[in-house]
Image (cartoon, rainbow, N blue to C red; front, side):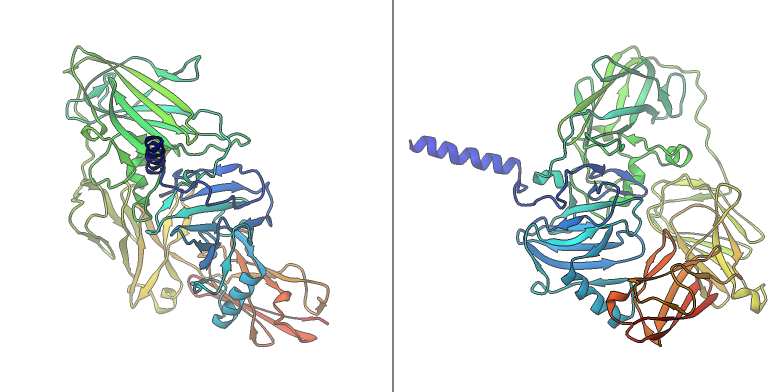
Amino acid sequence: MRILFLYFILSCQLLISQNPYPQDYFGHPLDIPLVLSGTFGELRSNHFHAGLDIKTQQTTGLKVLAAANGYVSRIKISHYGYGKALYITHPNGYTTVYAHLKKFSPDIEAYIKKRQYKAARFEIELFPKAEELCVLKGNIVAFSGNTGSSGGPHLHFEIRDKQERPLNPMLFGIIVKDTRAPMILAAFAYPIGKNAHINNSSTRTKLRLIPQKNGNYKTENIAAYGQIGFGVVSYDRQDMATNKNGVNNIQGTYNGNTTIEIDFKRFSFDETKHLNRLIDYEYFKKHKSRIQKLFVEPNNPLSLFKNVDNHGYVIVEDSTASIYKVCIKDFNGNKSWLEIPINGIKNDSLRPKKRQVTDYFLYASQATDLEKNNIKVSIPKNTFYDDFFIDFDVNNDTLTLHTPTIPVQKRFTIDFDISHYSGSDKDKLYIASIGKYKDKLYYTNTIKKGNILSTRTKNLGKYTLATDIDKPQIKPINFFDGKWLSKFRYLKLKINDKTSGIKSYRATVNGKWILMEYDYKKGILTHDFNDNIVNETKNNLKVIVTDNVGNSAIFEASFFRK
């Protein structure tokens, strides 16, 4: 009996060691079936997705529930990013995050608004003490929305550890029904070594996929030689959703031996920018499709890699036959296989790869200054992953700084000397990036110090000086001057600036600051009369909106309330 008991204890300890994440601790943050529009670790622009995007039935205002007991440890409200976001710290050390919210529960909403009015700011970040806003599992803490940079109504939900690293919430038993295997859209091969080639080409080669009857994939036989890497384009779909979501695990094997594994279980926010080193960044910028490279290039610090052999590359020798396989899994264990048959055939007659040569060579490990006429570019060391010839030129007030096809790790600075402009013109200048289509100009955050305009950016491409002489536009939506608003709950205006964009706004009633929420996607300012700030019968509204260059517009009107 004692032996059986000890066996039971050892078995339990083994199970715990295999799954260190509590399975029944966190509940669902919504009281509807969980259907995902985005999965953990999904490849996004310049970052990995840090949580689950849960569909809210194409609406806003659904009850958001505390996933476990704890206290509200952080509240952040911003126009962009997560919009209205709530952070709850739990006794077991984890923190859950709820983002893109429409509003908070009444007690939390009151806590926030008190501090917004004190600071006279809509955007605010708060860190309540542990005893101020305690919650119980299942309590309503907020209501779902579409705030910030959300592309549609949904709840963004995260679980972070004590080091603020996001983990896949599914590790904690939050399961979404998924019976479908991942899809493979494309496969690529990369000749890496000096004499490497694939199908008589020394450049990236797209392989023709052949779907198999069993749901897996195969490519045509390829002729290759030398050091080779592979890449795939893939996605996963859960049941009840058509969204092309991210996968959970990718593994590459060569003749049965593992060469690389990419496990989307956890990452840190410090490393998420290196997604651009994982994907083929040049291909993405040209084709808007993300190839996940199954090899690790220099200066790639991602912690997602496991069981890496020879950096994930394979060595194909002449007169050999071999097989490279890729296994792609979702969290529920559904798998798709890709098989790439390889014939080792050496071709000595191939021309070497062409290398673009310019007058400027950039060493990634060294700081570099590029200067011509009135423009200077200051590039800190380790801004780029690789050494390369950079295309740099200045024509009048337009800077050409390579093409935006090379990933950038950190921001660099562009300075324009505007001393040759007259005093009145200087005040309306800003630095703009030049878009790909129809030379459209996009404002970049511009700082003026004397005769120098500066911007810090992580994007190569073209930049120029632009002028903004137009004031923002302000228009009332649901009222006009002199209107009675006794039965209205909200006061709404639309604001817009067609050139450099909105920088700030301020609204007062009878000289007193009022809170107006800004929905930048619709350009709408909204005041809630339930704030009980407007208590007079006749009220004088004044709204000042300023653009990024400093042009301001003023709107004034009177309204009445009883």
